[in-house]
Length: 85
Image (cartoon, rainbow, N blue to C red; front, side, top):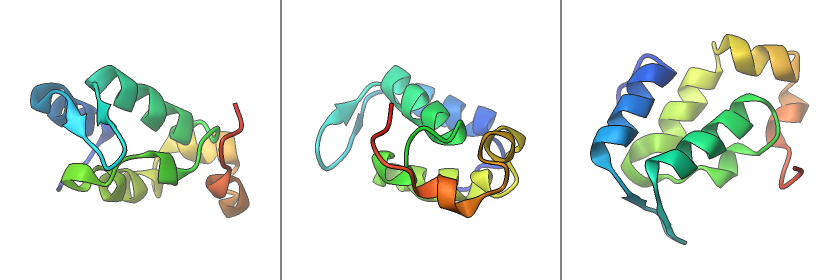
């Protein structure tokens, strides 16, 4: 998936509708919440489904995401936090 912003990614998710992952079907709202928790350093990227290349798109976008860099202070160690919160 070639998105250049989280807005584009969210638009794709919204237009696609419920997305089937390996463990469950995610509503767009559920995916938005998970992605935002990752952006704020509260969840690991592993919580995001790989379906439609969403996890890869988020990984790519996080590299330059001001929100993510602000909340993790650019610290890669914080990027791998698990189910805290």
